[in-house]
Image (cartoon, rainbow, N blue to C red; front, side, top):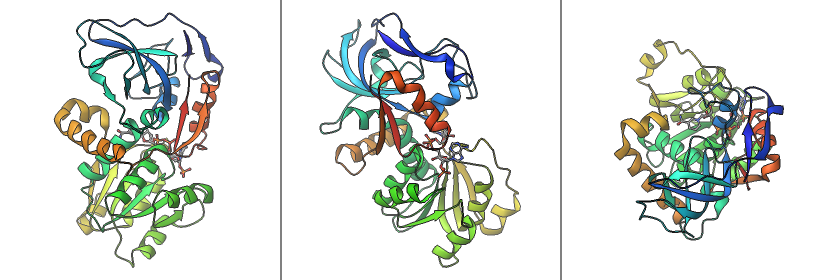
Length: 324
Ligand SMILES: NC(=O)c1ccc[n+]([C@@H]2O[C@H](COP(=O)([O-])OP(=O)(O)OC[C@H]3O[C@@H](n4cnc5c(N)ncnc54)[C@H](OP(=O)(O)O)[C@@H]3O)[C@@H](O)[C@H]2O)c1
């Protein structure tokens, strides 16, 4: 089969499509014919060996997929050949086929297409956990989302809106903020030309935000934290800017605010039951149409490396998918 292979770290020219062995379904596993694989920030970090854990080269990037089961291994009775499934892998998604444990897959709800299903788990489970579990968002509260047109950010805009919150979307261009409004944001801040802190204060009549979702980091983190209100909850999700902010601890002290976090990988290990409940609730919102991943670009396998570059260069809006 054909797959995108990363042969060396930190070298875009060494990520290319080549012929590799077909996967086989071992015990407890199935082979999925990949119809869509979402492109995630983590995929580009892995290709540069800058993620928290390494994928030994050569490896096939691609960490979440949707497709059709073409082979079932011994001991699997939850799925059959022909079933439409989706799920998260660590690597291996940018390929015509992938083998995965049956337990890592779920059935795609009726009416949801492969691209939307492939784009769901990483961005939407993370944002759902950040908003509901970590942020404890309540209807009517004000939620600020940084990097709001990115994969995690736009999912947070959609989910917070669906939960009845008032969303202030913050991003770096008009083009991105138009999309955030289309997905439910009530207000926007262009932090490439406006003061994030002053604008949030202005939009909340001086009270400050109830919750901040931060997948970006850097200088924006402190500016947004300073714009939280009494008992505000600041939720750390990621560092797309490449910089980790250091926040002085007098800031939370002054207003009873809390710095919280949501990180799906350790959460899955430490609190599998809580994650299963979060995913069940988020999936119900996908199934009934309240949530719909916004797919802005689709790439054939042969151009999948370009999708990784687009993510890194801050030009992606919503989700990009590779369709082998
Ligand atoms: N905690 C978790 O469980 C979890 C799960 C998934 C992802 N993450 C992390 O969350 C972060 C965002 O992931 P994502 O999938 O939303 O990525 P994404 O789709 O690429 O969005 C990231 C956003 O960050 C902003 N940004 C600011 N500086 C940037 C830079 N130097 N390069 C790229 N983007 C920059 C961009 O928005 P503007 O241009 O508008 O500033 C961009 O839209 C990543 O750090 C990822 O590793 C964490």
